[in-house]
Image 1 (cartoon, helix red, strand yellow):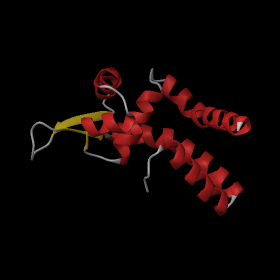
Image 2 (image 1 turned 180 degrees about the vertical axis):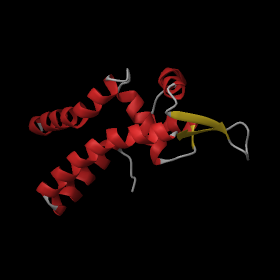
Image 3 (image 1 turned 90 degrees about the horizontal axis):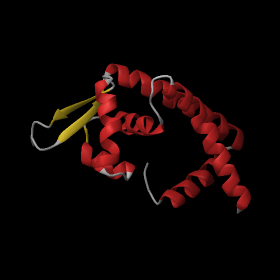
Length: 137
């Protein structure tokens, strides 16, 4: 179990190292990347859905989201069908940055999956879903 915990720690450290450096050059951090990632995955995501996805408070999300909006990486709109809903989307610059950040991680995971083989990938996904208690596709 300790070896598994250590490998999870070291794997995550390697997984985040390159994007963290890219973010740091812009005065951003991992929280900003998470916002960019999930808004990019689901354009027109509501602020409340993002809060639930990240499992953070409004206060914790407010400053980094405002910073991304101020840097013209994320835009916020009011839903036409319900003016109470605030919808988030990446701008063109936000899409480009998110693609760069996540692209490095996709390459890492792809290489690891390719080396481990399909059965290992299925096992890894099962373990990660179990740890996160999130069943997504």
